[in-house]
Image 1 (spheres, helix red, strand yellow):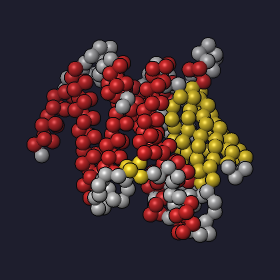
Image 2 (cartoon, rainbow, N blue to C red):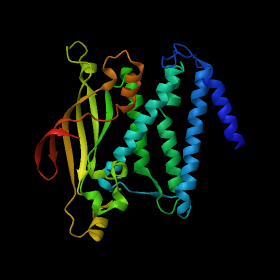
Image 3 (cartoon, rainbow, N blue to C red):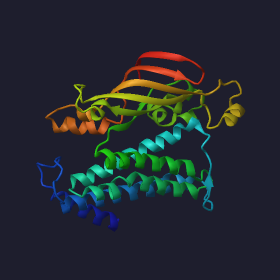
Image 4 (cartoon, one colour):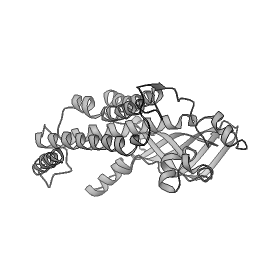
Length: 300
C-alpha cells in the first residue's frame, strides 16, 4: 500500500508539470517531467498486470520447474499472429509515448518500441513456471517479430508504411466448445481463432509519394483459419470426431489508415490512433486451402 501511494504521488507530481493545454502535442526536446511520467506509469501498469496475472490466473494452477514447450502446430498459428500484433502495438505505444516526451529517436526504439517484447517475455517466463502451460519458443519468436516489424520500418523509412490490423466476426464454432473458444462477443473476439483475421495493411501513398492516391488508402493481405475446435488436429479428433477438417484462409482487400485522415480535432486524432489496429470492413477476395475462391462484398 505504501509503495502504491508513493507511486501515485510521483505520478501526480509529474502529471502536474505536463504543461496543458499542449498536452497532446509532442515535445520537440526532452521534457523530463513527461519522461518521468511515462516511465512511472508504464512501470506501474506492467507491474500491476504481472502481479494480477500471478494472483488471479497462475495461482489456480500448480507450479513447476521452468520448461519450454513446442506449441507451434496449434490453432493454425493464429495464436502466434496474435502475439505478433500485440508486440507490435505495445511497442508502437511505447515509442510514441517517449516521442511525446521528447526522447531521442534512438531511445524511442531502444526503450519504447521494445516494451511489448519485454512485457510479453515476462509473461512467457511466468508460463514457463506453470505446470499447465510452459514457455513457448514460438510465442517468443512471434513477439520478436512484432517488435522487429515496428523497429525495422522506423530504421528503414522513419514511418510505419505497413501496419498490422485485426478483424473479427462471430462463428458457429464457439458454441461447440465455449470453454476454449469463449462465450459472448468479447470472449470470442479474444479466443475464437475461427473468427479472427490478421492483416498486413500497406499504405499506398507512402510507397508512391508522387501519386495522387488518397493518403489514407491502404491495400491489405489477410490470414485466417476455420474449422478449429481444439488446438491440434489430433486433440480435435479425440474430442469432436465428427468435426470438419480445418483449413487456412488468405484474403486481399482494401483498407483505410485512419491516422492519415486530416482533422483539426485532437479528440478524433487520438481516437483514430487508438482504433487504427482494426481493419476497416471492405470488399475482400478469399482463397482457401480447400481450393475455394470466394468474394465478400463486405468482410469483417
